[in-house]
Length: 493
Ligand SMILES: Cc1cc2nc3c(=O)[nH]c(=O)nc-3n(C[C@H](O)[C@H](O)[C@H](O)COP(=O)(O)OP(=O)(O)OC[C@H]3O[C@@H](n4cnc5c(N)ncnc54)[C@H](O)[C@@H]3O)c2cc1C
Image (cartoon, rainbow, N blue to C red):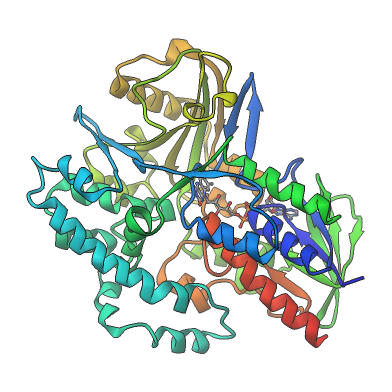
């Protein structure tokens, strides 16, 4: 029998590494604080509706197929490409922009506002493509043993890209496009990283190539939670054990070895190897009591936006609404700069709407629609009190109704709200930050919380909070990087 492994957290990172390890003969047990697996990729079943509560699409589908190959399984869920990628609407503008992957088709929508859009977009995407291919394999899919190691790797990147380090994402887009609409629509993707396009460094404009040309976006048949269910099925076949409602609150160590973890009932859990899927910065501070990650130090780090999410069940259909939609206002720069810290920005919130039932009829009763709203909001450092969440949500519902020209209020038969307080409480996310530590230059690569522990030789980290970063494909890559560390440790110990 192989070595025993305890994994703290059944998020996508925890489940993915569990399967990699189980397939290699390790004896795997996962401890999860909640009553069901998935972490942020989760599901809410209520009033006859089914809602995906977090991610609603993914990019870099090949990371999932590569994972399945590594584990020698058929991918346990089916996915399909999105085209249009999403729809964008500006307040006061009746036009809906459809983000087609076919650039000639996309250009038709900008005819009247951005002359020569097609050529501009192709030039912009060429640069974005070079950035993507010159960085992703060299920098992203690598383990680093030190900051020096990381910096030496950065030196291998084509120096022609240096100027993008001194420009914002929005600045980069503005070099190619002159209309506000094109600039805003194309820089919007930086919000997917949980940051403002005015703060995000232009190197991330590689995401435009990722969304429009390289691989695009995907939805999962039957809803995103099928990913979790599929992984759970595979883990069951490998006899991995999942223990729910078990939150790790303490630990015991002897020298450089973690001896055991302690849960909320003071039960002890021990194994040869421990993998933390809970937030790597938060866990080091709150559980391992590391000074470098004290609450004060964490507060001084840069976190992504908080998430206010709303799950609505309607007793009508909304044929006029696309599957994925962004509803923007008319003050993009001011809003982007304010929304991370200033609660007043929520008087006129921007928001995203996903209609899960559009392609997954099983997610809503006959003739009904299941809607998921995400609104970027300040994290709990800047807005600790969410007693006004109903008011904020009412503003969103009114705005949405006005834009789609249908009052949805009388149609609502199910309504659930998660504020940053809920996101923090459910998954131990620091200050309710939905995507965790931001991707500013000093918080990525060799500067991000490492995937091996600084003190305990038998402890490793996996998921979006360690390398390489946030989002589902990155969490999959993270499972490979952490797996390599563990294999090396197991071979040496
Ligand atoms: C609203 C929202 C929308 C998003 N949309 C997208 C999207 O469309 N596409 C995309 O790719 N990404 C999206 N993301 C990001 C994506 O969800 C995350 O990057 C990814 O799911 C993180 O996975 P993880 O395994 O690293 O962490 P988590 O999912 O946070 O998993 C960690 C697990 O550890 C558990 N845990 C924590 N502390 C303890 C403890 N002490 N003891 C035991 N268990 C513990 C938690 O309960 C949790 O289950 C979105 C995120 C949010 C919040």
